Structures are given as C-alpha cells and as structure tokens.
Image (cartoon, one colour):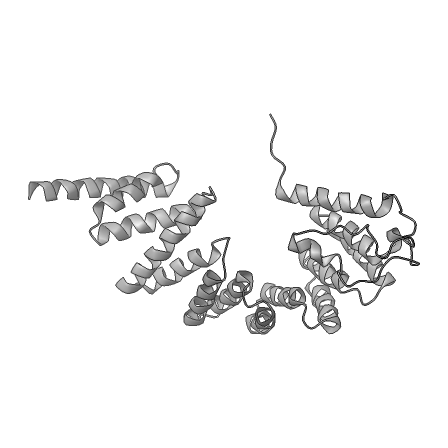
Length: 303
C-alpha cells in the first residue's frame, strides 16, 4: 500500500535538491566564468524566498558556494523541515559567522528558537533581523507570535500591526491581530480584523470560522443570522477543499438548529442528515434534531 508524500516531506526534498545543486553542481568550486551564480534556484513558493536575496552579490571571484551563508541556510531549513531544530540552529549560526548581516539567517533562526520554546533567544534573533531591515515583515510577525506565546497580547499587537502595515493584503496578518483582540475580550476589533482577513483572500478559512463563533456568542437573532452566513461560507470552502473535521461538525450542528428555529425545516433536515456521517455526541444530537423535525412536519401536515 502506497501513500502520497506529505507537503513537509516534499519541501524537505526540495531543500535537499537545492543543497545538492549548491554543493555538487557542475561548477561547484567557483563561478568566475559567469556573471552571476547559477547555483541559486528560483522558487515560486514564498518560504524559499527567505534563502536567496535577488540582489545578492555574484559568486565570481568569491568563495565556493558551499562556504556561503545561502548554503548554510538551505541546510538549516532542511533540518528544520525534518524537525531537527537544534541542527537547524547550528547551520543558521554558521551562516551568521560568514555574514553577520545575513537577514534570512536571523529570521529563520528565530523560527527555530520558537519551535524549541526558547522565547528569549527567538526575540533576540528577530530583533537583529528588524535592525538589519525594518521592512522585513517576517521578523515583525515572528516577534508578534513570540509575545503571543508569552501571553503578552498588547506587545504582540504592536508587532502584528508593524507586520500588517507592511503586508496589508495578507490574511494571516489580520488573523493574528484578530486573535490577540479576541484574547483581550475586544470582540468588535476582532470582528473587524477577521473581516479584513476575509476580504484579503483567507484561503485557509480561519476568518470565516472565527467570525461565525464570535457572532454566535453574541446570542442576538441578528448576530445568529450573521453566524449562519459565515458558517455556510466556511462549509462551501471546506467542500471545495474536500476537508472535514470538527469545524465542519460545528457548522452543521449550528445551521441545523438555526434553520429549525427560523422555520426552515427542509434545510435543517439536510444539515442534520449530513451530521449522521460523523460519530460522537454530534451524531446523537442530529438524531434528536431529526426526530423533532419529523414531528413538526407531521404537525404541519395534520393542520
């Protein structure tokens, strides 16, 4: 029985291929015969843009590619994807020994310290990154995440705002800010941020689910109508992505109850019937809902 490789495994393989190209390419010693080094692969994926500076210096008359900070970052990222975070830190430190101002190494090392739960070292690494380039949104975002882990939400908000100012159309930035506002009990600001994430192309559907919960918790009929709208949108997105799980069950259960309460028994029956495909308490609640709905159908028919 064969299984498809995971996304992380594919990324690790891509990093290893890049590393082999750097170390064992046809001209691995020097690149003096070319205007620019051809050993730097160009990736469309944004995460790999961390490793290579498009305006970086050419390799001609420089050190061999295997002694360059870019190479160390590729190796470090390879170990990061294998969850060997201490080894990853070792290679990012090697990159910084070669070039103390190599921005990507500071940022990536900050990520690794977060994984190792060394928040003090993570903050130090991210601060070095923003000192080198104040327009590096990744470092500001990393600082926000680190302070959020420390439950210092006002500090986290400050850094998330910095990141959002640099990436105003990135849904992840708005979701991060909204999460802090939610922890602080500032529901109105959280809703506004999640709505900005929604209009910024929230491909993961985080904003829809959180907006639905925030409106549901308000409890008013108007707010429950808004919650139903966002739950329906989230369900459509998850169906397109062929995803299922607790969020889907939560949405189906709320919509089944909401439609029953508003008198739309046909739609309520459809949502409750879909819940029967799941297990646990939701399935039992769906059975009770269906019995209630059938009883109301019988009453309406007799009248």
